[in-house]
Length: 223
Image (cartoon, rainbow, N blue to C red; front, side, top):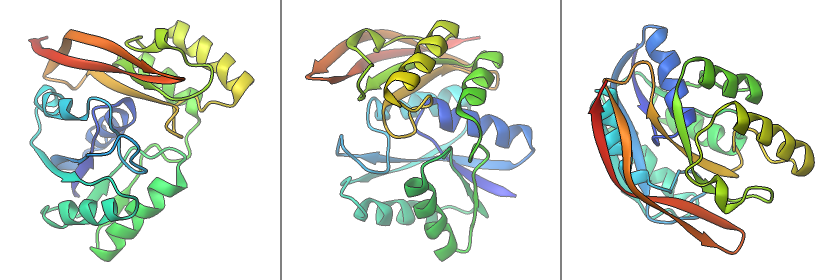
């Protein structure tokens, strides 16, 4: 099946892409909606413009569209993007968010496409352990939940992070995979990447109880 994979550069879309490639789907391109609003209901925001570097590191073409980020209207932008693609299915990294999945499903239904969600309803801790076992290199680029501090920005997801996330989940109910927008990520490397992304310049920006890791310079390096 010819598919396009919705990507943000984060861990979930990376893992979904890994599974789709492994299962032999014909991935024609990556697709991204770039929201102009930080509080988009549907789409990733921190460092989203690095998705070009992500696509180059993966070695697949990228198709993208800008969106106002206005609730529900941003779905029209997603639909405009998808209907321009010569594919039979759309892949997303949805795990537990019914809001996200049902809306992508609806767009696909209107366009007579298959909605493919390889991570849907999988155990969050299993997903994080799979990321570690595959040696997918991921850093945290945004935190928006109680229990996650400024120190988390730029932190690499490793065994220590998993231990801390399990404890924060137990105390505050924060999703282990950040499915509710509790935290955002950027993938720097994965087994199927042609090149790895190296962060050369970044700073932590903190406001009140949340913040993001603003990356201003990256470099693609040979592996």
